[in-house]
Length: 389
Length: 46
Image (cartoon, rainbow over all chains, first blue to last red; front, side):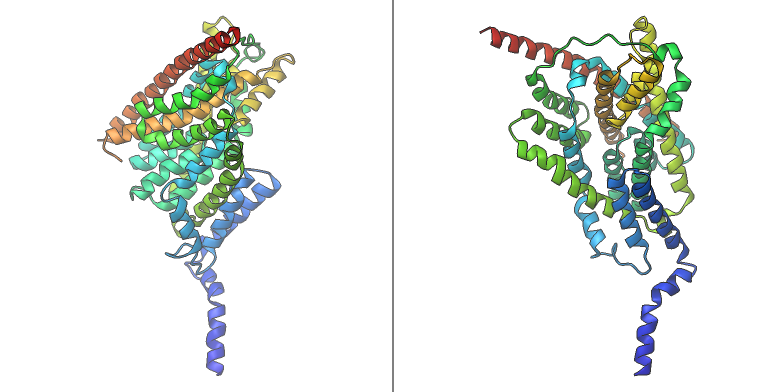
């Protein structure tokens, strides 16, 4: 009897013994990281929708002797259900598409070029990652942080994880890096904007656009984008197709229930499940390695270079147009929507109180959304062409 | 394929491809809005 009680007590203390064993410290560090994510989300309002579920998944996966990521563990079931097959990022994209209004872009189509320049960080970061000795597939995954687009990063990296070409624990690191930097865009971008532009350039007023956007153009636009993507980069069709599906539902104006479901229930449930499952991959023994730190450093570089690329095109445009383009608008050519456009508006107003750049920046920002998905689609198409996927 | 060749291929074809595709899209959007505009104006005149 006493032996049975002793064995039972020993079993209850197994978790505590694990923590103080040499195997326990990586999990303890990860629990600290999970608490850090809670602090950022709750106290600093940094991407709470993502960091709370990711942090909680990370906490559950790192508690001693946890079986949540074992074959039948509930986080593993979620992972298999929607991350392994890339479903959740795509469902989130349907929600994003249904929340996006492309009217400012259709009124000023040339603004989409900022969305191309804003992807420079992806390709330069890829070069640096390769130079650092990253395997090709991991380098592409890290570079995709430059898309400033969490679902794209998860989709691309998980594609490689599914093929066994990168470690699945890296998907978690990449997702956390992507969402953290997206949340830090208001801190990262303004100093670069001020450094790269003069006071005179920032004060430039852009002549208002007289283009009216017909409703039918807004309905045909998602179809046009999907067809173009299908022709040029069919590998990226799930990404572009899902974002444009959401937008098509919204613009058609006849399926309010589906639009609301995409904006709310579908996006919310997918975000919760995706966050938990991604957090579940963050096991300390696989997550804590120098490569993870390099991933975070390269992710930051990608977003800085994106901003530099957009501003550089803005400055060229300013010169070519004889001072009719405000170079700040270029900084909005990334996918962080509508945050990047708001930053441009704020910085423009600081230089000139009469300077309202918001609608122009929204055009560039929505161009950045399309640009980031298009860049990822083109990368996947090239990888397919090179026989890497 | 070595890393340098791969990286440069991705940079040139990837960045170039993105730029050209989005530039093409900008032209197509321009046509789309003009066509839709003229249709709507024609419709309202009728």
